[in-house]
Length: 311
Image 1 (cartoon, one colour):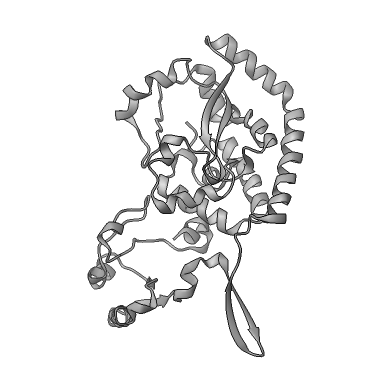
Image 2 (cartoon, rainbow, N blue to C red):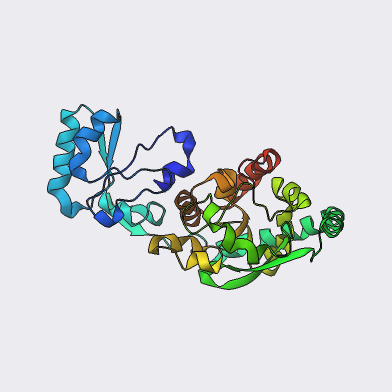
């Protein structure tokens, strides 16, 4: 599902999923849980399903054969993900010795020299941007001081790679008492999962709305990138209270440094459900490459200019 969510250009539309484990019969963002596998024949008819992808482990051989038979009777194409590939699609590689196929597992891509390359890119780009954008940042600081009382910068503890806390810097876009007023606004939360988002948050200042519209409040995080707390590209930096509510699979997004922008930024920002954001973050952690970072970086420019999902 995370590969399909990360690549809408493939043309797949996920109708939903079935699972025989009651604890896993919960929606994942906009991807609906449709019950258990016994519901499949009715669902195929009701939802005009074109294809069924089976991802059951091989010990459920009989169940797999039953589902294949059901799909054949309903005249629906079916395909199977081989059990070995469920380890992680990006961590498996194929080799051969004189025609005998061998399957092995790779190390996570963001290790060793790969991480060093990413870090050098971060230092070079963040350092250059801090110099180039210094006049703009000075003007923003002045506007914030003239607009409302309080500090220019907002500091907040966030969770970095492997769960390490760090202090994140942003231009203050809210009134000085914003943190104290959060509790009274929780009933109006428009986000799902552990996030808090509110489209018309009354704590946001006049200048703050403009800063958020074009993500200019994030510019001081270039200093976080230079320090090594963050990267230019990566998952959204989470709050400690959000991480406390994570399920086990959500924590895989903490295996890479958080970023100024990422797949979540280019795919909808605040409009994206939390669990879909996690799918994209885990996809990024498993598929990192300099080329993927470059694609995300250049996709971020129109995302910021058009302000989709920015509030």
